[in-house]
Each structure stands twice: as C-alpha cells, then as structure tokens.
Image (cartoon, rainbow, N blue to C red; front, side):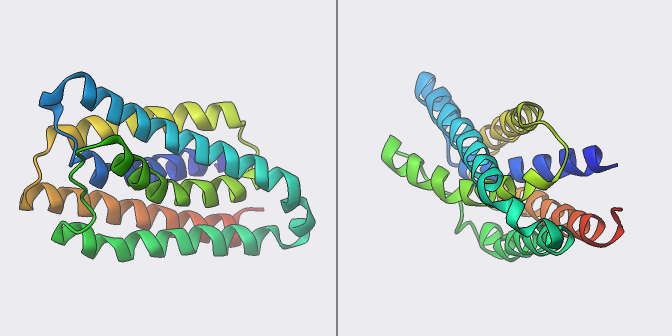
Length: 181
C-alpha cells in the first residue's frame, strides 16, 4: 500500500507544472519542447535534491517518522489547495516569452518536489522509480497544459486537477501518518 500511496503522491506532484505549461505556446516548435524539457528537469532535480538531503539528516527524526510524514504531506496538500484560487483566476499561469522567466517559474513549482523528496526518504520506494513516475506524470501534464489555451475554461480544469492533487496529498498524509504500521 505504501508503494501505491507513493505513486499517487508523485502523480500529485507532477500536476504542479500544469499552470506553467498552459502558458507554453505549442506553435513555437523547438522552443516549446525546450520549455517543456526545462520544466521536467527542474521537477526531477528538485525531487532528487530533496531525497538526497533527506537521506543526510532525516534519520535523526526516525522516532517521529509518522509525525513528519503527516505534517509534511499535509502542509504540501494544503498549500496546493490554497493555490487553486490563484490558478482559477489565472494568476499562476505564466506567459513564457524567454527561458529566464521559465526557469524562475519552474523553480517556484519545484519547491514542493524538494520538500516531498525530503519526506519520501522515509518510504521504501527506490529513487529511480520515483524519478520515472514523476517524469512520466510531468510529461503528461505538460502535454495537457500545452494543449489547453490560456482561457477561463483551461484555468478551471487546471485548478480542478490541482485541487484533486492537494486532496491526494492530504489523504496520503493521513494514511502515512496515522494508519501506516
């Protein structure tokens, strides 16, 4: 069951790129591929950096494992659900005209992956499998975001997926924190 929850968490994390990907114009060809590649790489780098960082010091909190799992994923989920209102209004969609803007947006989206990577060191799921799941999910949501135009209905779809991801994170935190033995 922990593996299923870990996969759900990684899929929920991959939805973070959707509001940024809505601003990518797929008609620009190679530039849109480059922008998608930057989003994928930033998610993976932040997850790996968090996992490595968590491996360095999280063993110190081993006796508080349940509390750390609950608090960490719960706060990430709440933060994602609070961002839904900004996404719905279109405030979290970036109109990407250069690579520097995209890098800043991808760093902002990668912070949750960094935090989740730190906490995921407690779960017995291999980092290479985590990277594969996160990259597949991220590619899917980038392609979905590129298909959506920056309009009101697209923002609603993006906000709904973000809200569902936040709920997944909250329910995962409850399971891992209190019901996982």
